[in-house]
Image (cartoon, rainbow, N blue to C red; front, top):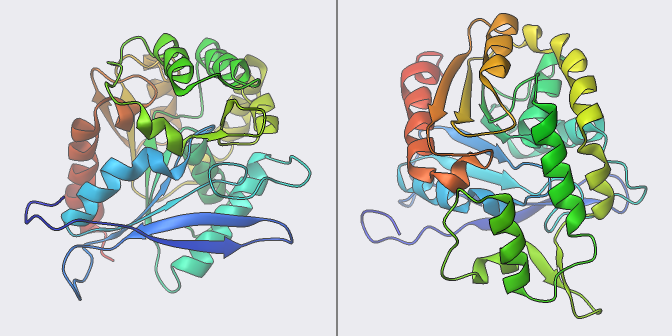
Length: 299
């Protein structure tokens, strides 16, 4: 609901890629018929998430005048699984470039990318692809803490055999995120889990994706992105979780060495899932960037 009592609901759409792969997305238009959006925002979720990770954020932003697009990455949510199980970051970057070309003709959005989504955007922008006019990284930098990355990978792999019930899945999430209050109503998990023929609830993403989340890949990724990130010229903001085990103080220092024009902010009580932990503070910081920094660039 908006402040005027108007319900903001998204419109679904799809982007066709190569044969056998269709990407799913949805867009929230700004409230008010014929309203010109303050800006266009493209939100990219993290690995093993879906576009629904952004629902609360997208609704508020749309109620405040922004047009917001959220995508399910290849192999996640309602997007098709890759026939070959190829979830290399370059393939995801190609998807991003196709999405922007089709959905934002003649204009460029502000990209908000969490974790994997931020890495995908860094690769595209650092490779000289004109996919955004500004970039917001949500708890992701070129240098990630290997122990935290391994913890994420272990959590993803722990669900390979599915869960006997939504309650069991909620228990697994609570054990992984002990700082977050467990919700009284767990029906929201139905957007991230699917009940399969074996009678068990499985995460709504291709399990072949999980092989990329490891401590070794975190170290490899640092050297890879060090060569790309300095080439990013768009206004950039890092919003990190204050208790994240993925992005550390050293991670932030390293980013600023590579990208001196970047701004950094912290959501104090949030872990790696920043928007999920404290959506209100996250959005306050995002909107500061949109109005005070990106706004002076011009649309």
